[in-house]
Image 1 (spheres, one colour):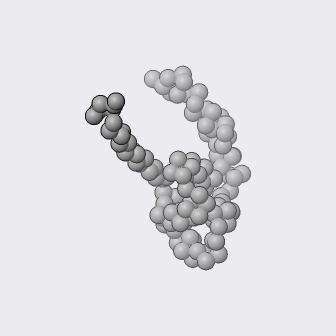
Image 2: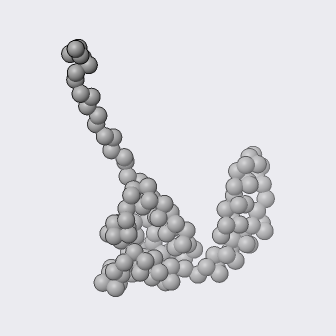
Image 3: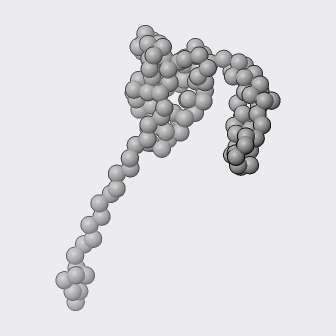
Length: 129
C-alpha cells in the first residue's frame, strides 16, 4: 500500500521562456538589411514565430525611414516573403556592402591587446559579407 507521500501526484509548472528581441532596423545608409533579416529570422526561430507572426511583429522593430516605408506599403506586404524581398530590394545594395567589407578586410590588422581568437573571428565576419 502506498504511503501518503507516494500517492501525491507531482505538480510540474512549465517554465516560460523569455522572448528575445531583434535590433531595430532604420534603413539608414550603411545598414545591411540582409544582415538584419538574418538576425530577425534567428530571433523569430528562437521565439517560435511562424511567418505570420514575423510579419505581425516586424513593425515594432522598424524605425525611421524603414518604418515609414512599411507604413506606406503595409497593404502590399501581405506575406513575410514579400516583406523580406521589399526591404532588401529597397534598402540593400549587396555589391556596395561586399566592396566595403573587402576594403575593411584589406586594412584589418590585429590590434594591440586583441586576442588572436577575437582577431580571427573579426576577419571571418568580414569574409562572410
